[in-house]
Image (cartoon, rainbow, N blue to C red; front, side, top):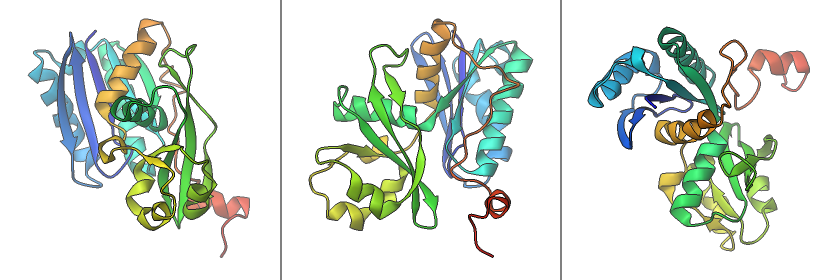
Length: 234
């Protein structure tokens, strides 16, 4: 199945094409420039595997959590590609993508993985990926929530496997928790390749998303929404 996958959820993103066991990847290294780079990167990865974006059978996208601008660009592009190609569309959670990579690299397929995204203002947007033999992708997610970063790390039970972008700024908090199992740094970020792999599993079972209802999952409400809800000071 010719698959295009997009991840623009964080500052550094990626685009991938997958087909018949072959993978082509392009990194989007310039923060805030995903909109300018994305179309060319999609064409490049598809061309590397010998086909064009309009020939895709499946389009996958990391739907979040992430930044407002990055996610809007990635999700909107994925929807447009799926519509133009007549392809199926699958949105993948960054939590699930990180959990799958962490399990593979750390060899922890049978225990929960605590995953945190840096939500700014000293907070982490965190959830646990739980092993699930009944899930199409072998993982289920607990509901995500905002926590102070230090409090989140302090709350984790001894032996917990931890991963996610939030660990990049958590060195001091982790120093006090030598009893936690910190996953390899290369598993801390979501990726287009992992989104594509997970999307293929879902699509094979007929589980796809409606382009009209797929929406991004943001790290936290916008400032305007927080003010309206009374959770942000003047």
